[in-house]
Length: 263
Image (cartoon, rainbow, N blue to C red):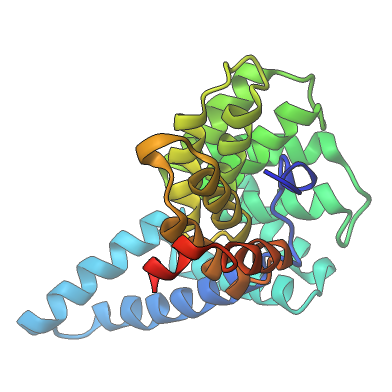
């Protein structure tokens, strides 16, 4: 598990999460277009669009059309690194209970974007959004509990919120749970099988470090669980995701005679 410790308790932050912002912006704009179509006459083919729109509006925490437009504008400002404008647009929505706005307000308070850094306030925003089921907020809330950022350290709550986020497909939470079980931290007993399960989930979700660690487990396992072919497969994916040590491990693996059976 070389180099995994420097990614332990990996938080989400605004800059590394910009791609998520733009995907959300695109989806929200599509939702707006679909929502506006509800005012017109609906053919049978339009009914499914109307239903889809309402579902998606519910997912981001607002069914009010003006609130949705304000949310889209706030996320656009965030993506453009205009954090003062983002704060002005998202703060009222966060106060109204819009979980997506609460999450981004948390990130800005956490990192001091457009405001004075305030980890206590960030914790409260993450908590509010996490309770509404926001997976990224659940992950960052777990980080806060694990590291004592804005709240006293609480290992049990950290693991609980990572599990909530991981069960919703959050790759960072899945990766961190893998570390927790692999190392045996936060009151969790060391369990490599469970670590492997979470890293596999994160690896399938495209996490480069989880792919690297999963490859190590396959290469170093004993008996039937050892598979150099599986190790090579995940290291190749990890290399594609920019993890340089996976490339080194892959080159060493290629020197083994039994590697050629994987080709």
